[in-house]
Structure formats: C-alpha cells, structure tokens
Length: 162
Image: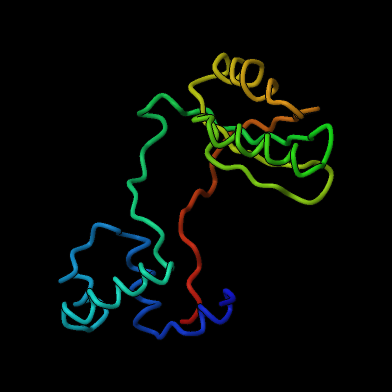
C-alpha cells in the first residue's frame, strides 16, 4: 500500500491519536481516550491497530544531549569515491555501527550522504572524523557544517487532516 493510500484510511480520531502520541508517548490510555472522545477500550484498539499497521513504529524517550555531554552537533556532507551498490552498502553498514551518528541520508546532488553527528566537543569531533568516518572504505571527501544554534529540532511528523 502506498503512503498516500495508507494515510487516506486514517479518520479524524486516528489522526488525533497520532498527533497526541507524538507529543506525549507516555499518555495513559484513559487520558488519550478522553482527549479523542472515545471510551478506553475502543481507543486502545485503535492504538494497537495503528501500531500493527506501522503508523506507530516505536515509543522512545528524548534525551537532553547537553546533560549527556553530547552538546556539539554537526552536519557532514560525505562524497564517496564510487557510486556503486557495493560501496553504498559498505558505507551504510559502517554508519549504522557508529553511535555518534544520529541521522544518515543518501541524497541527490553534489555529494552522496548527509549525516548528523553529536559529540562532546571539537576534540571528540576531530577524533570521530579522523578515526572513524574518514576511515570507512569508499569515503573520498567530507565537508562539515558545525551547528552554532539549534533553531528547530522536532521529531513530529505532520499528520494529514485537520
């Protein structure tokens, strides 16, 4: 089923459930039911269906990077030496193993990947770049953009409707 047809089968209540759970994944079923105007049992059935159908992938806790000594964020453009399936796979497998990398996206344009990293400080970034990222087979070039101010950082996916 395409994303468009999957989203089309969500009614207003499903959409509201998704919006509320994105903001507070720990909300009780009773409170969620109250806020979407259902009784608890049908509300729980809807949440379970949304989980089963893949609309809800998982529940997480969002941690404060500064309190965990990971306050330095950077975006890195990565250009590979070749754009072949095997090089893409080697890079993707390596990136998945690096805890400093929060996001990695294959992109179209002047480079191959855009990654977001979080580290403690500039020394930790330099060690990450030299010892880990640049040593991945196939990495030809990197270009870094250090985050000076985080203007917006959200986990919220816009829910159709409303």
